[in-house]
Length: 181
Image 1 (cartoon, rainbow, N blue to C red):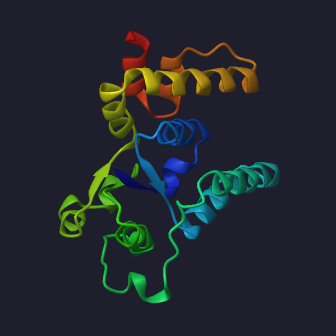
Image 2: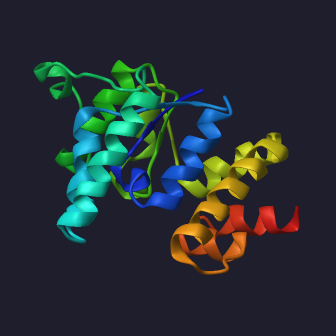
Image 3: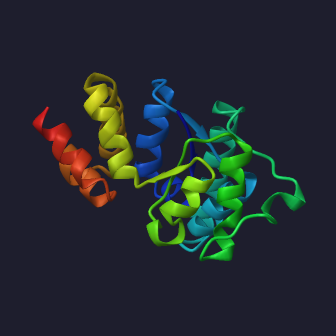
């Protein structure tokens, strides 16, 4: 499965780390465009220049780790598409150009299922998307979650539970499933 990751799931960090960690286990192939990565950096910039600098470093590392993930769109690529929010047309164009199966986004309203279906695409929120992989491969997703949890605890100095961390990261159903084992 190939999935375009919208900017809103690339930033925040825990959600991105879960998605890319699961991709790293070979469960799906992530895709994005340079514009999506720039949207990630701009979202981080709202938290200040140091957070933006960190995001740009993370973007460079992400690009290096996933060199085949970036979809370059020619200028005319967006012309034939329509979405309720014209600012999201580039996401649909990247998905079509990258032969994606799905767009992973928190913005369901901006990606109507009927329009995506015309292009052979589906839409998934990150919680449902990851929950599906957990149902199929609980050990692999659990290993990713363990790494993300350990990193969050180390970086924050707090004792998180996986359920609390993922609930905060807007992945509540995945957190509940992982807590149950």
